[in-house]
Length: 307
Image (tube, rainbow, N blue to C red; front, side):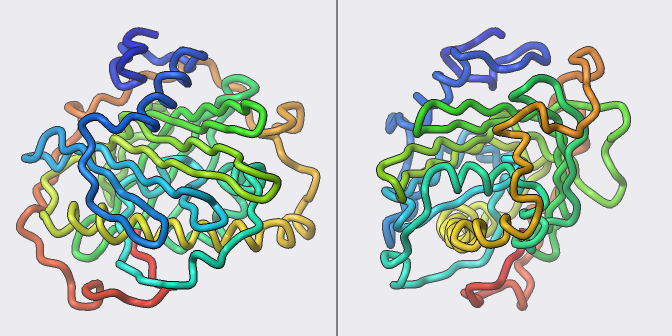
């Protein structure tokens, strides 16, 4: 794979990430150069790199000092790449604790559990298995009205590193899952999570996303995603982590193919069945003049969700 220094964003063909790609992703998560801090509260920081302002193309990075403070994530790791959710404020988050790194890793992987707690999801499923630590999946999510809903098809890879974990993805094309008429096909250039264990029941989490939403978005969407929606998403994921062990005990508790690949029930896929999803091959949707709907405006409750 070409362009390791720049991460997967400079790839020129569909390839499964190797150790250098995971290393480059981790370096991006830990880098501070070129990032602008747009939100800092309750132990959560949100940074943005605006790459192409006219297309709303930007990178977003969300970091939490410790998972016993807060967390954010998604199953397909592009599940909500734009983090389009309403704002929230809660002074209670510093009291949250008891989420080990391995629990967060399980929650990010468990697609059946995601369907239970992620009220933003319209449809999500795994398509096929590439290797023991890579697969292809589909994720569709709700956007704030009156924007059109988005979806992605991504190649996802993961790497456990002792008490640390990386899950990351990028968009691909699969012949059986072309763009839908009722959705805007977004493009994940590079999206992922870095989980770092800090103790038996605590960890840090960094979410990094470079996504082309395919279209001109209103400025209120970009501002909202970076300043308000990402922190709310983190709180929702944190709550899901707290409830996961009890839920999993009642739902196929030993089935974790992300840890035990021999358990996988997915059909095998060959790389030759896939091709890169180039953003310029998809239709651009101009939604820049759309105003935020009244019901989506304001802070909303902790249970509101708009992605």
